Amino acid sequence: MREALEKARRLVVKVGTSTLTYGSGKLNLDRIEHLVRELADLAHSGRQVILVSSGAIVVGRTRLGIPRRPSSTPEKQAMAAVGQGILMQTYEKLFAEYGLNVAQVLLTKEDVTNGKRYENACNTFNMLLEYGVIPIVNENDTVATEEIEFGDNDTLSAYVAVLARADLLVLLSDIEGLYTADPRRDPAARLIPLVEGITPAIEELASGAGSDRGIGGMVTKIEAARIAGAAQIPLIIASGEKPGLIKSILAGEEIGTLFLPVRADQQEGK
Image (cartoon, rainbow, N blue to C red; front, side, top):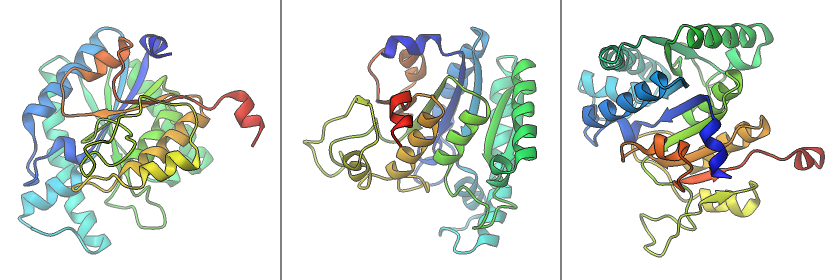
């Protein structure tokens, strides 16, 4: 099953806040540099890569010297506006070292639910990838309100994968995949390498694990797998703390948790 991932040409890679930043909220530049190097190498080898990057709010909050999480939408929007600029500046500088251009793509839920906007977003992704550009995607927190926000980038990345007709979605997190229990609390927890269908039991397992610094936890990753799977896109949850993992995944190595797409007979049985 995993051997087929080698054929994936168009990838969406989502990296979470806890992977990009230290507990202090400052950027983990060493980790970002390793990620950029790996994505650049994939691009040079002929693959097309879209990066969905979290971290804007935390990075902006840190730059502004605000110790607490935002408690209101305007606070969140202001912090995101500051942090997004810092993130893009960092990515642009690092990708340029490998001769690659980047493009900022900020989306709201309306962009994937409104027919005309959906079409425009599809066309934009296709053209950027045709030009060899690395699209860097985040939610448009500056204008998003509770009514039109995704709320987390796991869900956003799944919609982006569908928009871009990706062959694979990889979620890089601070946890190595879906476990039988929360590995931070239960030393006997075992990694589940393969999920062939999202059952109530799988949903229950996901309810216990989340990240301290970001918004998305395992529940949102399961929802992302559901969205991607319905569009026949496999999803892998893996640790973003180890460099070179994406190449290993594409080589068919058993890393993280692989969620298989929904089979045709499963869709018909709904």
